[in-house]
Image (cartoon, rainbow, N blue to C red; front, side):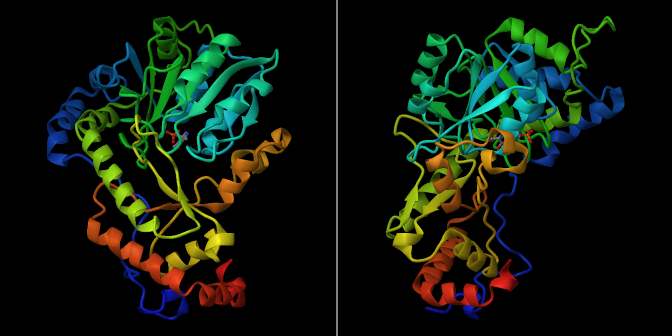
Length: 398
Ligand SMILES: *Cc1c(COP(=O)(O)O)cnc(C)c1O
């Protein structure tokens, strides 16, 4: 076996065409052209027939009463919390993308971080109850990488303490909990439609809810808070979706299920390879659930494997394989959250130093995955030399 690129071997992938971690799979442009042309000719560029059509189709797909299209998941989360009138504290995981928590700060809500589970990486439902106080108004749960959290337990807790239950479903368009599509759980689920997610509109978000009062209010909220009479009852945002984006979404919806299937295949392919290595573990998706695998991540135990996550990421970079550390640092360790830092997040902190997210997108071929695995195999084989090399050149790599 050749030496890894970090030790002078020939990189497995060419520098001019590295393997990116994501590549959006888009619908056929030809299919979009007639509708794009109509929008051009009509001059109605925003919030018109295509947005309505997109909302109707996604509501049908998700099996919910209402979908409200917005300009991003972040805006959708901000407006949902505002329209529900949340106050005080909200229980939220820290092992997530920072925008989950940002939405709370925009509403002057206090994030109360809860640790995650070692198996599913989702917020640990068993650690929520001790965090509930008189000030708690909601739980904001996340489908981590598309993996559904423990729905029944979350619902039970929300009912017991009279809390709202909202989902950051950014990763979860196409996920299923016990055969039921993500979208209809809790008071609202908020999806992201940005290019790294399953359903892509360019930029965009979608609030799914069975609450008609909330849906009506959201439609006002995304339009500055103006219901149409130019006498705002509250301060909204401009969070409307443009027609071009909706057209992309309508076509994209047709290929979502295929993408979910492909990503599950890729995940199984990787897992099959990494299973042979002690010191590497995986996120558990319960058998009865379906994840989108918006991300595929491995957990690297440096004590067992003899090489740590950061060294492996550097060595892969030399092979022209891009990776991400989702999610490091966890939200509560980031500067913007210094006021909300707390102890009791041991699993979150450990996972975040060991997690490595690998390339995954529906057009990633078996051959490419095998070559990525080859890169890992030789990095592992030469791990002692690799570690020495990284230490020797510490400055060059930081
Ligand atoms: C991508 C993402 C968001 C933000 O979505 P935008 O549409 O970019 O605002 C929020 N939460 C999670 C978990 C995400 O991955």
